[in-house]
Image 1 (cartoon, rainbow, N blue to C red):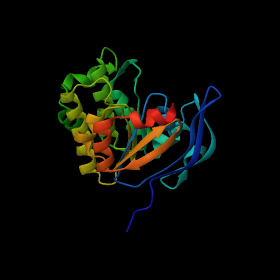
Image 2: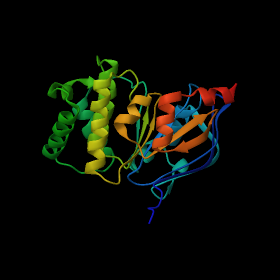
Image 3: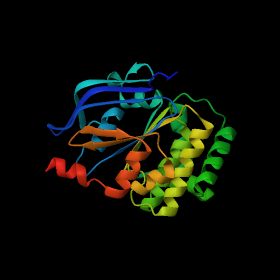
Image 4: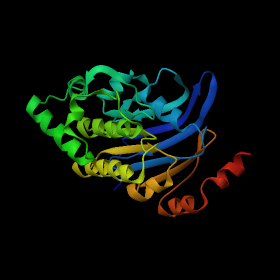
Length: 251
């Protein structure tokens, strides 16, 4: 018996600066599932996940989105986070003067996840061990002085500590070498193992990443809409042929 959808999106239309970038997109994500959205640049992938999180520069003009039984589009961004939605940015911003430790503890408190400082430190230490990062990270300012790859690892560290119901990962793999990809993928696998109902929607261009992650569903997005969905067979074809078929359709 199939579990009810954690995220259910229907006929979603999204605009950025009065330009429609997502056109009639529908998607269901059930607890425990990992979905990957791929496609050429300008397909609307990032705008879609930003719309779900409530980014102020992205406007939903039509359609519905329900998350964990709630009307997602009626919630403010912080309420979406409190409900269990998490967004990892493609280009994370620096927060000078706020340590990683204090940032994560404040985030947990804001989500009403009561945890003693000792229990929090244990969770943070375990998460850093999974990602193979130094303990000194917890005293550094958030993203300040971090390399591109370190910033992406820090996003996954936040994910492991906060343990959301659903993560939206906007090209978290961008700029990572293969070794770092494996570490990031291991972080996601550890969270899925620890929290079987955890679900994720990953936006990526990196077909190699799919062989490491082994997603449940892959969707190809073109001109603001999902044009094909599939599983292992589609992954193999994308690995062989890339997006040439879809780019040809667009031209």
